[in-house]
Image 1 (cartoon, helix red, strand yellow):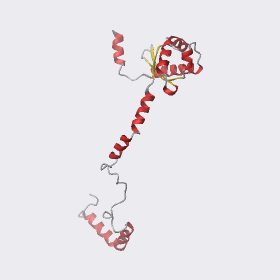
Image 2: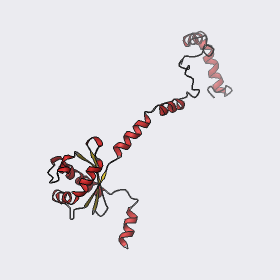
Image 3: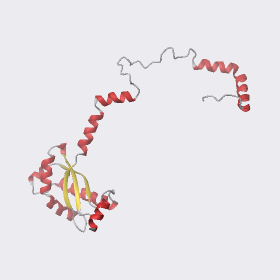
Image 4: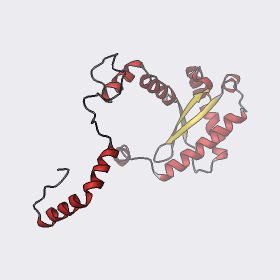
Length: 192
């Protein structure tokens, strides 16, 4: 009864530091085993397997090993071969990692790379590019609207340099008038 309560409490919590550390040690040990390829099973040794992640239970008795094959093919065949060799791999891991009890290994194919590729394909699709164009302000869907220049009606006839010249000629009188208005509080605030 107490174990059910404890497992229900740990179900929503993130993994502890100890779980992360032991999971990473198991990942390194399994990766080393697959790098060497010392297996009696010829089918298992024919696969190029990468261990991407190991998630371990809070009591360190069960470990879920996520793997990927080179090129992403033959995941089902590799999964069958890994399940068949799970007891052998557990014994090898027990020799390599210093734990009181070696965890039971279960293998699952890592589909995160396929999912990331799927999301990348969606983001680069023409429909998403069209929608991003709408978000960026192009809601009228005109194909002719490639000209980003200003309309002639909106432009002032004076350039900014000419406005500066006007201020320089009358600048002293205008500056004194503005200072007087601001001090007396009668002047309007600019920019409001």
